[in-house]
Length: 491
Image (cartoon, rainbow, N blue to C red):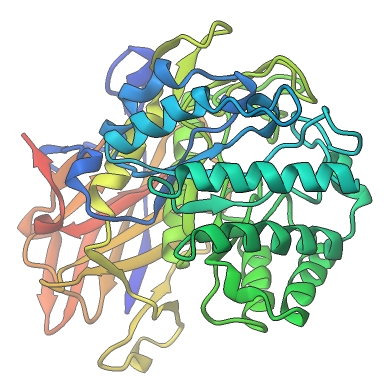
């Protein structure tokens, strides 16, 4: 059982450093700092819940060579990219894969796993769609046959280096709104069958839904189920941009429930999501809000850890700011973890880059989600295996728990979840208790800064399997209460 009690203390956080990439909250409040989370590179992490957006390379809105050195330190292996039909086939029947060879060969050499999407279309062919965001999928007989030849060539070329694929980006948006869910589902089946014929072990992502659309989801899944084709797919992906990253839970669970009507093996994956670090008209989803690097970092880490807590794989969009030169955005998209300019030159990492390093360092496949972390008003109702919690405040707090596969030591994530991530850092000191806990030396970790704090002996106690903690600082970004053994600490 987890009991959170709101203490009346509110403390204004301080700034750690004045440089733009380090303006973050300081939770050094009555807790002695003992170190900082040590980042782990891709090679140091066997597997995790995370994927990383390296999109728009097919349209030259970003330059892989400008940011490739920043990938491994982020600790994420799987990289989402568009394979770029229009960039590869500029003359009918002639494929030039040199640009994609360079990226795939470099990425796999570094130990990354490209996740290639078969978007977008090709205007060489009548009814072939276009290369811009929201461009329609191929619909004419000539274009569909050309698309199938390209997918065949694509998978044949990379089958020994790439086994992660995704079909079509956001089929319910833009020019695709003329298509029915059934047409999109049939297109997914058609593409997946080509991939599987060449590469039977391929893991294919279907759907790639834009904002949640109940009618589209139901029609899409029903058509694939009626054709008995769910066996072609490893997962179904969605992109759901909401201003408060904790406020799409209902829609995600609705999609998951709809999917589970037809299959228990095909999972739901969040395939693209992120927040900007600044506002600006026409700069993509969530543009009309007063974002900063601080609120972006809070949004991304809350979305990542919220997805993890709900058992959903999670992709971060994207690694770098993208300089769109055509299509509906046609300007800089500020959702990157790396600051860049119109020439696609990387300037520096943002706060979110460092914060995500802290997430990936702690949360890898060695941790198992405690699925029974649930709210209750009756503390005595907890069974010997339950991990329930009760709140003594009307503030909404997101709470998820995990244990190490081998040691069974635990870590809990907590943050104030009721509002859009703010640009201020008011910290509230709270008391909470955990029954059926497992801590030997509990510590507090601020995910944004990576700061690790000792919980003094006077501020925690254990009675049986119940652990009680006093004056733990919480705010609108993730804070961990963890056993020290689960945190890689740099002094």
